[in-house]
Length: 451
Image 1 (tube, rainbow, N blue to C red):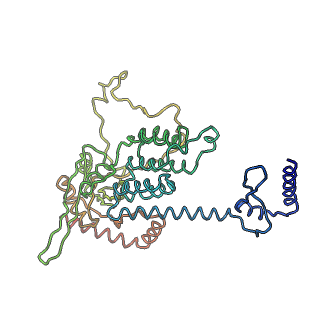
Image 2 (image 1 turned 180 degrees about the horizontal axis):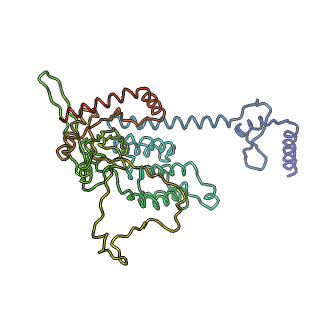
């Protein structure tokens, strides 16, 4: 026993002397931590593994930057790999079946679902290409990629410090993309989120906010636009004109159907479609129009339906001067001796006004000229719109005696920016005299055509 105690004391003293006499630098200490442990054998005890420092190792740089660089490269490589997986799987066609096949291949590739966050981010970017950005079942399938019961916080401290923040942010991103496309989650979505992150996680709270607001705003639009617009240009023009007019009594007329004719010389002549709309009130206003004052065909004006831009044209007139306005005479039964002072037939009250309303600010009322008709055409040239005016003369004979002026612009399919508008206005100011001359020629041409 004495020999054993002596050896233990000697060995303990030797280690103390080694650590005291040997100068240890921070870099060497860091290298020692990276060095594989050296076994320490003591008499009467089991073998234990310890770490020790040594001056033999040279100074090495800090590996924190290298680890960050390796992590970034791993992320980039994983994203590229997932993109390649989508491209290889969807060689034939990009549809829902091929997208689900890619998700199934990833789930079967590794039971631990390593790299699932990068895969979900790549899948969210590829969803519009496969046409599944509005499919709730596909979103639930993406949430099913997360491992279950791994990211659930075990105590209030983990819940307070955002347990597994990277995975929670990824799930919230999936829910935000559903919100952007107006997809309302279902019970399956909630069950998946509770299994993955628990009842108090950030994705579950995001789900609760979506279920509160989305059902309220889903059917709040009184003029809804379908996700799939009609492909036929005539059906699309009917839908667009009905949306613009907002008049149940308005009548839609197809003045010309699209067709292609072959002349005797072998040339193909394409006839564009012309679809117009006009209400009974517009017909009565046009019948009262002064034939000495011209009407104008203006356009094209853009109308966006989802991601499709359509263009329409107006038949309008300038504002009638105050001296030429004719006021409707009041009903003699409401004004005269038959009217009772205690129970009047007509009461002029502003029911929209409230005692708490503030009318201290000034509002400028801008009056515009009347709009007599609208149309959509496959081509925006003057010849095509002249056929529309000729078709309107069947229900509006007064158009044969009214001069028509065409104010047409270039029919581009894209909206102009502010810089383009300023550039165009500078060119238009230089060619103002030329435009006046062209308008006079158009007036004479329209009169000759109608005569």
